[in-house]
Image (cartoon, rainbow, N blue to C red):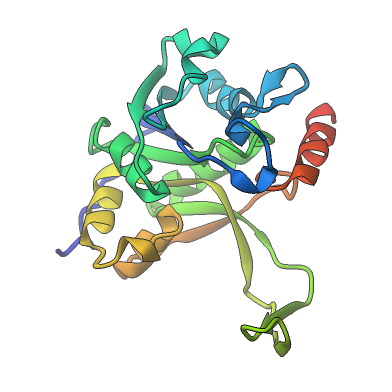
Length: 234
């Protein structure tokens, strides 16, 4: 499928956020999915969603949750007029695609991880402004600052990787919905799609980088909870 020429001119009046919240997050080691752990009196997913609910240009927030999720509907934000729930799938790409199919195909979507509670309004605005000006999809990212090492299967270092032009991909990631759906469906192997940008990369479509804040961390391990709590208090 040729998806190169699908992208439409962006309008700020047609922006939708998609929150990928169907994961389990086993590495945190909690008894419940990590997005429902509490930080400063609110769940992680509430912190992650709130900036999109508060944004005046985002008129809808589609939250993709697991089939057996019994937590989200009991949250105070569950009844917010902007929120719509959709059942997610086995993998992140399945959950995101389920959400995308509910949205106007000419809309621009900002896909965000439910486990990134420290996203700021400033970074969201920077991403929207960049896409609006460039008319090209883009992601938030931070440049790699540490020395990078590649190992073999036994964990031994085999190479020092040049860090110039290397970036840590963050979310949200923002694309024309029709273009993103087409890129995902055109992929011959969904296992290669680790984020939305990778779907467009596989389709040969350029994706821009917007440098974001380093405190936009993803809660993955137990120690990340304290770090996220610290950032949220700043």
